[in-house]
Image (cartoon, rainbow, N blue to C red; front, side):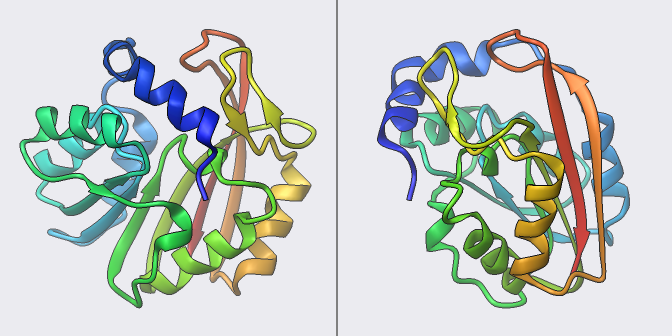
Length: 196
């Protein structure tokens, strides 16, 4: 389940969070879109500001945007003009329903002890051949950032083990990219592209 302190941060800071500058659209999002069939059904885990959902809609994808934060969901709804479903990762129970799953900077808040189970749920929610892209902040084990938010902070080997324990993926690619986040601190991001 979602961490209460992290949800409280997004409740208090939702309006400011969605106004934070960001690169639009992200090359990784465009690559994800390009890898999907026209009109693909996509589950977005962590809609946040609605930025990525808006881009996917612009490309004609059939998206199911979700977030665990009611306040962020409301902000995303303003941007995309459609309902953003409230969903905790542990509540996902779809079976072979999606061509793709997009989880940009969201699963990094999943409790480390729950992550393998969450990834297994995502695997089951994908159609055979479906594409799953997620990003995580790299680190040496779970903790909180300077804003009080919980992160699972995996290193590359730990993250790969979570994916391998969750399911038998057709392909699994983990890339390390330096960047930043809402806190504007230098951050190593682990981007994972997996195929059911």
